[in-house]
Image 1 (cartoon, rainbow, N blue to C red):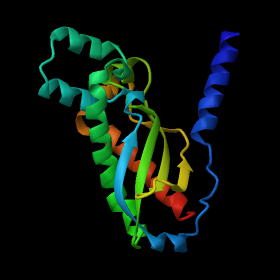
Image 2 (image 1 turned 45 degrees about the vertical axis):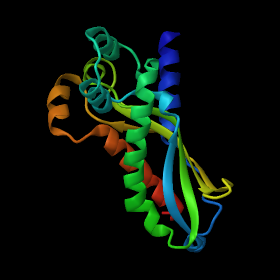
Image 3 (image 1 turned 135 degrees about the vertical axis):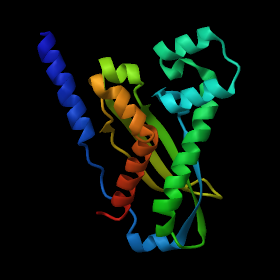
Image 4 (image 1 turned 30 degrees about the vertical axis):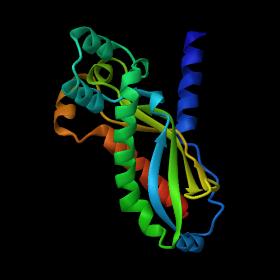
Length: 200
């Protein structure tokens, strides 16, 4: 019975990771009416784990040993004080990706704002990668809205995506030489969003 449950759970994860999204409701030629003027991230409270940003918070705030110990063993979502720093970091990283990959597609004058609503965001810690799991996860809804009226112009219900970031006994070495896995996770997600916009 347990084995069957595990297989069903794994099958569900595979299906979620392979889900496709219906094509955009707007033609590529219509993008030339608009321009991206800002990126807003909602849902920072769903972040399960983000080691690089957790470490940055600990380094720049007066926290005690008890806080650090809890942070090492509990989900980040248990710490309300992390939400605003997470949101700021997410807006910066998503903003950079939009500037590089999405904004050049929108060359018009009507201003649009990208509202990114996080549903899942989880970058496992080194300890989790060694003993439990080695996949980072992201799922988000991206809504391009009129910057003045707030009306939705084009919505993308992004799929759940899993990214292998290395685990097991080699985790420490991989973590030492690899780039920020959270940044790579966001970059790959926005690249996929760009491909969706262009119907690639």
